[in-house]
Length: 324
Image (cartoon, rainbow, N blue to C red; front, top):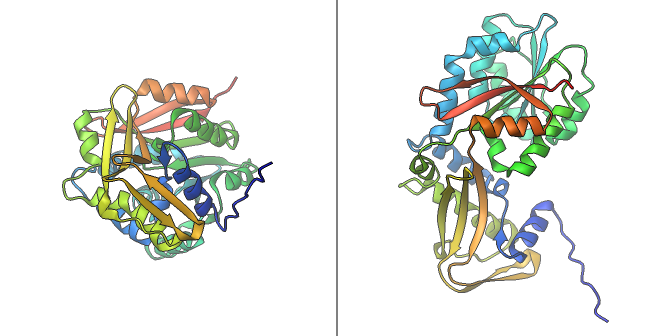
């Protein structure tokens, strides 16, 4: 009779890396790219001419800021609740407009990182001293559960950047349904969705010629080296991007250039790679109106309105809770 060996993990990061690299095919979660270096690389990605997403959403928010603000406003005031505010650059376009209109609102950015919230709050205090800001630290849905009890005035839930695209459709429906549960009739969800377009444009956005995106993807292995005492040779892995225009799914991989073995000391784990074996690191889903309407319907939401850029490459949709 064999005894089952239980591996004890000191963090979710350790467990996810162990599970991902012990699976076939291998995978790692893209959220772990974002350490200090990963954050810096992503800032560089957003400035790349190929990476249109940030630029297009800036265009939408700048062009339609007055219409969007009017949509958000309520006679009793409203709470603007943002999931994953980051540095708040795009959100500040809306905050500035709302303050210009003397709108009655409280801005509630949600993030798991208290440090990120502190930095954002300090930045907003300098730029918009009159804004009412109440940061909410914690996981999105735990905080939303708590905020669901706020029924005395309108809630506007904001999620910019097409982060929903990191989820395949079944998980995206679950994600949207969890938001819908936290909404009351009259509340709004304002969310960005990157649109289907020329496949080459999409591939270029995730595989720039300067190699910044490749370095960003490879940073996942570098973080494992640094945090878990691994010996990945980054030169022996290649960043590779594919896009399926039928499903609208872009996928990022790291491809092993040779047969090799990697040791992860902190996990007491040896990982073998065949030549050309892959680690799947990220998906970036692209959408059209039909797909977004289907996702919304499955989650108990209805599209009220949408805003797009001049090229129709990106859309911000406004959803309401479906009334049966």
